[in-house]
Image (cartoon, rainbow, N blue to C red; front, side, top):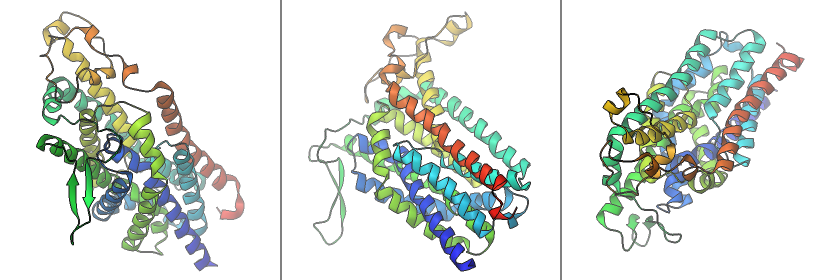
Length: 393
């Protein structure tokens, strides 16, 4: 019976990893796919590789936090309870993926494990409190860092990058397999600047894939690791393989949502947001804190737009009490490569509104599901462990 439960637990962990691949590929490579820089297949391949690298190098620290430190007694991680925890994590994420929405895997997983701890009286409130504090602080840090970049550095970055979206058809970056050794192949009419821009977008996606691996591998394997029945390396390999399957299959839905439907976010802005968000996630993962990339990235977009919009007002004007109309739509004020006016030279009416950047209906659906998915995981797990006697607690 024990061996059967272990197999079921591993299979459930694979199901969770599959859905993690589906929910994290979109945020990482949605901009590159949406701009027709690379194909969905190439995005899936790169995501799989860099997710594994992040999971293998920094990921074990987050696995330890969720699998050993979030609860005061790891004995509650029985094979039977692990199946239930992973079922609620994977099931909730599957609902988000089916809706085409990349939900927060970290919040979903922490919610399910914390629910098990609360139901059994073994939750380590100090560790949970630390995680929640960072969940509050990290988006604020992302907002202000992005705000400073938006006000003082975004125009220079925008003029330097100059990445233009390509028409549907052959992607900017592809792989030439005609020779003995495959090599990168670029668009026929691409100049050096366009090639640099395309490689930049892809490199940022790889960075995001790496940061996802550092934080999200724990969401699939931490409960199984907590039992001590399977070693860390084996679980990372299994989890990463499951993520790869999700990248090549169900991730197509979130790639469409993040690449085309939700926003017209300029690629320059996407690069800035990705660098800031990935940097924060990797930093938190290195100290063992699971972080929500989706939430941090959302606040970074708002902060970047706020900083860009405040360029209509100088500090001396602000000191005199002049108000600044603020909108994330300011990120669409100029095209990639276009030089922006100096601070104070623009008029507020020159700044587009937020509706020019976000699709309201899709944005509302994404925000709703990002809250619903972790709630389903947490509430469902708590009620199950608290009131169903089959788990023996």
